[in-house]
Length: 120
Image (tube, rainbow, N blue to C red; front, side, top):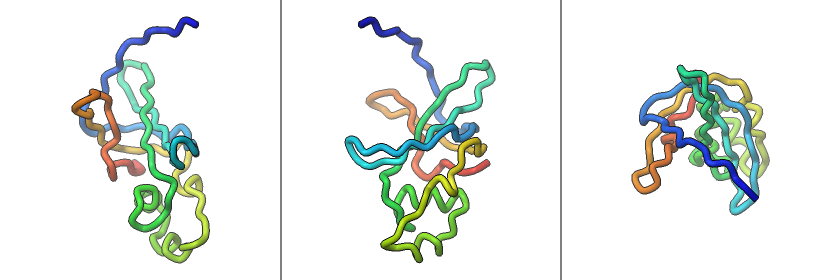
């Protein structure tokens, strides 16, 4: 099977703007919620980056903190301990966002800086 060779797309470190395009709930290798963001680009080429959060909601977890930045009241999380909440209720597709990225030293891939993803 032939697989196409693609050009490397560089995402500069720093602040970016974009919109949420989807939330993906995956089970392998761990339970995660991946938030896909299409970054704005001046050249018309869409670049998508994802921010992965372990699928655990509390006021201290990465997913819980992200949900609170998107409008989920801290009280709603703390009062639902032992229950469930739907991240898609707060992190909605087509929401305009801002975030920071930084290249990982070893791989050179850009990652979303933890805690930087928030509505615009």
